[in-house]
Length: 458
Image 1 (spheres, rainbow, N blue to C red):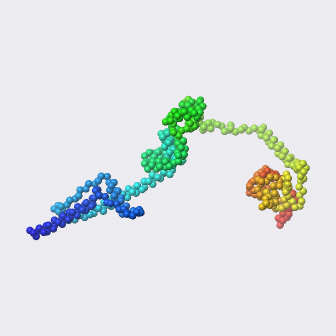
Image 2 (image 1 turned 180 degrees about the vertical axis):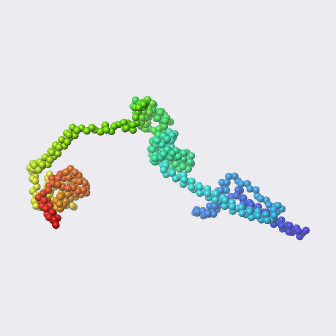
Image 3 (image 1 turned 45 degrees about the vertical axis):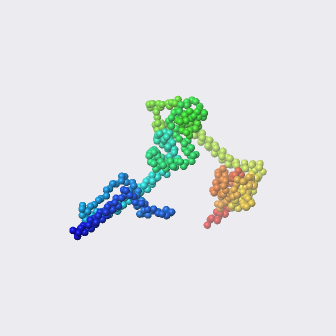
């Protein structure tokens, strides 16, 4: 018996040890409901980034705390008489393999939640840049005044051209989306008081406000005191930022569009008399709009045109005679050209002789000297230092190039800066109020043309 008792005692001890091992593994596997593993944290004073193992453990702690309802798991009690040794080994193996799948299942769920949490603000703040805090404040004030998003869309001028659907979506977001409403309120609180006052002054008029203003008759000519009394009598009806002048301007608009109580719009006539613009345009005959041809008037205009052309020709022929008369009165004889003078620029006081193929004219200074100093003729402070260049070409034609800022008028036609113009005999040149007559030595120019023709011949 003693010999048999020895192995039985040792066998029962081994079974007790195995059962305690099973209990320990099961308790370790299912201890998530009652016991949360401690979070690893650094003991340094400087914070450092978390490693992967720390992120997994912290997500485990959060995910286990978020599970709805604590899982109630009873510990497995195994007796040596109920289970065989092979079954006990299987239980021990399965119990030891419960912990890895738990961590493997809990960690991915927490990571997916974190990814969703990180992506959500990006989608929310995608369209926040288009709506400014001033637009939000305008929208809120207008909706509180009119309680109609359609009238807000028609009457409020935002920073961007929003559609009615966009305004509706923004209003619903401000009401029901906590993230967008929080961001909008924070942005509106940072606005300057002057900007807020300017926005509040643009608030739409409500129906009750317009009803009170419509009671003022159109025949009366109310002053600011009347509207100030109206504000004082109804402080709860009118918007806080309303002034007497704002009420007066809005009352004038109501009067203009016949919206006062004592005004009535005349109905349109019924029947065939009502016409659209397109119908009226089709009725109009384009042929009647054109002026009828008057042959008698055209004949008279043609005769008058002939007389005027004849008078112009006579004046051109008499011009040399009048020139002699003017010279005799002013005491300035016509220039006697010598063999070296190509042309002359004659003014009221001074006469300039052109004896080279190219001369510069302008205003002479101490630093810069030019060929023709126009300041000798009169006040030339508006003339540039180098106003223009007169040049003779080989074919005998004179050209002037404007090099200054002010235009040069040749026979009444302006020559702007950088442009050229041909000068004829007796051409009138005007520069900054100074007038000159350009005279050409026809004899010398004819000789120059003849020599140029000879040179061109083979």
